[in-house]
Amino acid sequence: MIIKNRQNLATTELRDRVLQIIEAGIRRVLPLDIMRSAVSYDAASRSIKIKGDVFRLATTGRIFAIGGGKASGLMAEALESIIGAENITDGVVNCKGGDVKTQKIKAIVAGHPIPDQRGVSGVGEMLALKHRYSIGENDLVICLISGGGSSLMPYPVDGVSLRDKQKITELLIGSGAEIAEINIVRKHLSQTKGGRLGDFYAPAIVISLILSDVIGNDLATIASGPTFPDPSTFSDAYDVLKQHHLLSQAPRSVIGFLRRGRRGEVTETPKTLNNCYNYIIGDNKLALDAMSGKAEKLGLTPYIITAQQTGDTTAVARSRAKEVMERRYAGYDTLLIGGETTIKLPTRAGKGGRNQHYAAVSMLAMAQYPGQWIVASVGTDGSDFLPDVAGAIVDQNSLDIAQAKGIDVKSYIERYDSNTLLDSIGNSLIITGDTGTNVGDIVVYLTAEKAY
Image (cartoon, rainbow, N blue to C red; front, side, top):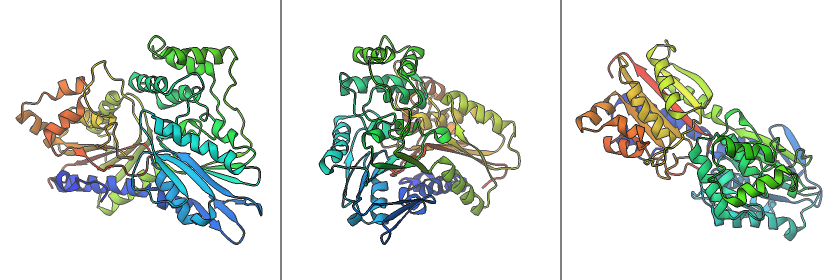
């Protein structure tokens, strides 16, 4: 069971159905199944097949594995089971945690969403592989990448300390900047992001297997594109900080380095990478399709609205509720959404994450719906900013309980304290622990005109 507190949350038949749908979505994007469907290895010909493309190793060629992201640990475990640990010379991946069992590939637990020294050390070990083994043109480097890789694979440029990198990351996350904007800055403060990791291993072939948590599967944005050519520039990175009014708050070293880059005093990120091949093997749409299939098996009528939901969390939650209230999706009782909204936090924000906030806002926005309704919003990685909460589920009874307890729901929402609010209501917070995957957020709306 993926949702650890499902028994407590499933207080009605409709709630139980929603929780089953969520579990089906997360289960579909767990690394082992995805890797096995995308990758195969033929020992006789020493060839790896990835989504139809075949890479044959030279007689003296070796296989190495590197990478980072919330799913990279389980991806490494899956890779060993597919290729055979005995066929992998060495490897290092940075992951968030989880029970990873590997033989050849070292899994290092590092910090997320704020990078830490463990992450820096892990990347250092990845880079050291090249010189230790004299990795060259006959060798193959498999890079395992998933959402969260930007934070989990830090390696700041000379002159910018880890502490300064942590500070700018915190500022960007709290500013309301989109993930693509955040990663433009990260790429230009890193020795490995923005294609630099792939370039480092040249002339060896680098194959990246990617679980995407980014809207539109932009390879330049996922984990800050460590093995993909970077279309952005130092000027773009500087403009992100300027646009979000962070120039006066950002560490001096950060501003100074970006300004040097704008003047052409620092080498830009690579714009071409002839030795790198990038494959997206799983994304949000896979999860939504599985959720739709599960809903049908439960006798429901599902509709996938989008896999690319973005925007301000509060505004999007209210807009979606308005669509439901206006019966825009008449004929469907189960609405499915994927994507990742963005919260711009006030100076003194409470506890929570975008999924909990989405659910809390929906609780008020759906209050006048003439029938039964449920809204659940969950991070597929199992962590909605807070490490022990994946998201939340609310229904028409949630507001009744809050009012009976004298809880001012609106005030909690306004100060972005959704975790405290939902914890006080009870039977709302969804607990999964680290799932070992990450394809962004999933949202379920379930409505019913009849009683269950």
